[in-house]
Image (cartoon, rainbow, N blue to C red):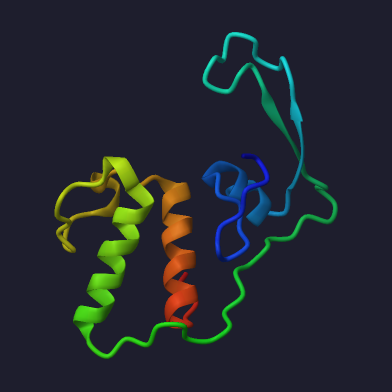
Length: 126
């Protein structure tokens, strides 16, 4: 699981992806790190930063993979991306005017959404 990557080559786990994107190396799984953590089978993940040479690992924008013809195309993409990120916790319908945090997206999810939009439409978002 720790090494699983998505179609963009990024780590699937949003917390580990955040660390990697900010210059860390996901080094190893530490067995028996937290024995009472049944969900993770007692394991932790060793994340290493080189504080002297740390650089953010930016998403590469390589052109448009899905050109938007209309505002509705963009809206549909964003709604589908948010629902995909939320997966099981996704509401049946998403209002585009509703704040993303109210929908249940956290900061790691926002990084994922940013990458999806950037990759699809070939734009860099701040």
